[in-house]
Image 1 (spheres, rainbow, N blue to C red):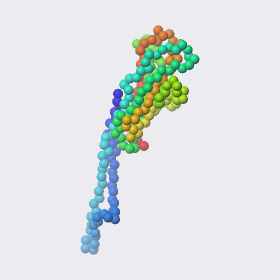
Image 2: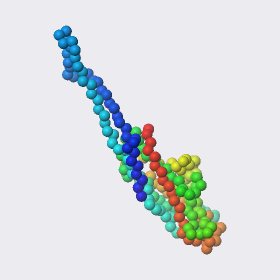
Image 3: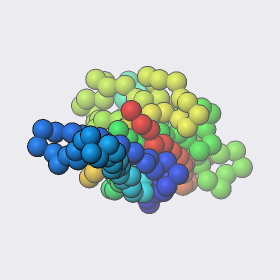
Image 4: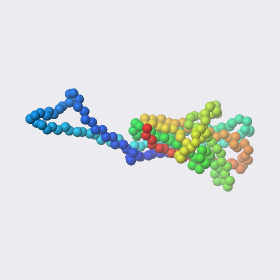
Length: 205
């Protein structure tokens, strides 16, 4: 899935008016015989071109099959990794693209997947990390939904500057299956889904 913004309205027009008189420049002369002279004034308007970008996000990701742990004595995480990539950046040198993320339906600041086709659906919370995490290092990092307050468009995920074409932001989703320990599996069995909403915004420094 690709997100594209064409922002022709933001195209800047640079007006450079230069009057330079170097020592070796051609000159006109004014004398007592020719009391008038002309100087041509020149300028240039550069077309900065259309501002546009493409940020690539995955169409779908999956935690796979979840299982009920035997106990809550230790964490039982499952992880889902993907990248958000600056596929195309047609920007000026003082511009960049900021990427935000939020859950489409959960309360602000939380991310959930919810049981489908159930009268009283069960929901499972997960965390979002802006760095690769796994069972061995997850305790060294904090999820973005734990370290900041969400804004209108959710949590700040990353920023791509004008020259970051081809660069990617790694993202890891982490779900602790310990939330299943106190549940009756027959009640919560089935397919689960949720939706992450990504929002991009052009900025200027």
